[in-house]
Length: 76
Image (cartoon, rainbow, N blue to C red):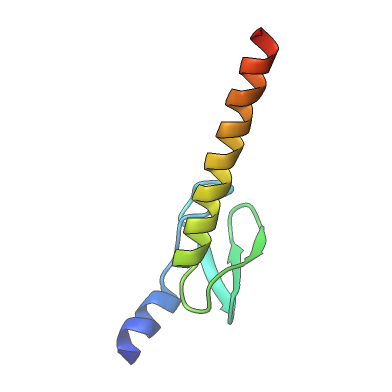
């Protein structure tokens, strides 16, 4: 269990801003991209948590729904 956490916290992750595999953990929950120099808050041991992925997909779905409604109103 401990080895799995240590491997995941020392791994490099794909940056959601620039798309390069340069996202590295600086401290607990602090992640820094060496390419685009963005620093973001994430999970303690992994860059993305399951709850963050769920929230991002819900926001994207609601945004798409709002855009569809705006298009319908525009053409009516």
